Length: 466
Image (cartoon, rainbow, N blue to C red; front, side, top):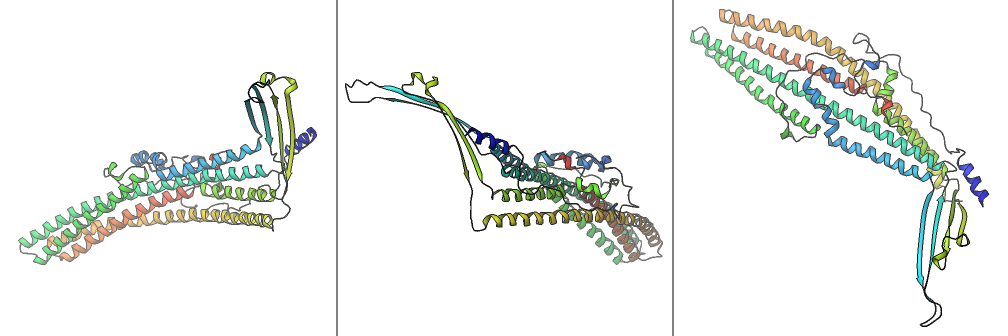
C-alpha cells in the first residue's frame, strides 16, 4: 500500500497536464499609423503620462476631479468587487491541490450489567488524525487554476478599461461644461453687442434718419440673443450634474464656477501600432479570455481520465481511556480508490468540442478587438488633423467677420447702408464665433478619445500575476 502512495505521488508531481498549452495567436500590426505623419511625431510611449493622463490638458479643476473617479465611482466599485471575487475563486480552486488534514477525538462513559454487577462504569476513547488527497495526476485542477487565473486577469483588465472609460467620460463632460461656459460667455458678449446696435438704431431713429423697422429689427435680434443665453444654462447644469455622479457625489453637492474653455491642445505621443496591444486594457481582457478558454479545453479533456483518491488514518483507541496513547493502542490505515466513467452518451466529447469552439470564438473576438483599436486610433488622428486645419480657417473667418461688422455699423451710421446689412454681418460673426468654439470643443474631445484609444498610459504589466 505504501508503494501505491509513493507511485501516485511521483506521478502527480511529474507535471502531466492534459489539454493544449496556451500560445497567444500572432496578430500582424502595421509599421506605423497612416494618419500619424504630419500631425504629431511618434514618440516613445514612456513619454506619455502613466495613469494620470488628464494632466496633459493642464487644467487644475480637471486634475482635482479625475482622481475622485477611481475612489468614489460606484460603477467602478462594483467592477472592483467582481475582480476581487475572481481572485478569491482562483485561490479556492488552488486549495484543491493540497491534502485535507483532519483530527477527530471521542470519549465514551459506559457500564455493563445490571445493578450490583461486578463490572463498574469505565471510559473509552479514540484520538485519530486523517489525511485525504486526490492528486492532480492529469492536471485537471491545474488547468482549472489556469482558467480562474486568466478569468481574474481578464476581470482586472475589465476593471482598468472601465476605469479608463469613466475617466474619459468625466473628461468629456468637463470639456463640454467648459464649452458651455465659453458659449455662455460668447452669448453675453453678443447680447452686449446687440444692445449697442439697438442703441445705435434708436439714435438713428430719434435723429429721423432711420425708419422704425430698424429699431424693431435690432430689438428682435437683441431679445433672441437673450433667449439663447438663458437656454445655454440648461446644458451646463446637466454637465455639472453628470460630473457629480461620476465622482460619487449627489448633484446638489457639487458646484463648479464658470471657467474658460481649454485653449491649448495637448501633444499626445502616439508610438507605433505594435505597442497598442500592450496598452489597451480591453485588448488585454480579450487576450486573457483566450487563455481562459484554452485552459477550459484541458479541463474538459481531463474528464476522460480517472479520479484517484488517497487516504491515511492514524491514532489511538483504548478501553479504558487511561492507556489511550500507549503504543499497544495505536492504529493506522492506508487506502486508495479510483473512479472512471466508462460511458455517458458522448457528453464529455461534446464538452470538449464546445470548449474548442469557445476558444475559436475568443480568438476571433481578440483579433476583431485589435483591428477595432487600430481603427479608433486612425479615426481620432484623422479627426485631429482635419479639425486643426478647420480651426485655422475658421479663425480667419472670425477675424474677417469682425471687421465686416465694424464696417457695416460705420456705414449705417453714415447713412450709406441699411440696417439689414448690419444684421447680416452680426449674424455671420456670431455663427463663425460659435463654429470656432465648436471646432475647439471637437478637437479637445478628439484628444480625449485618442488618449482612450491608446490605453490611457496603461500597460499589460499592470495585470496581477498568476
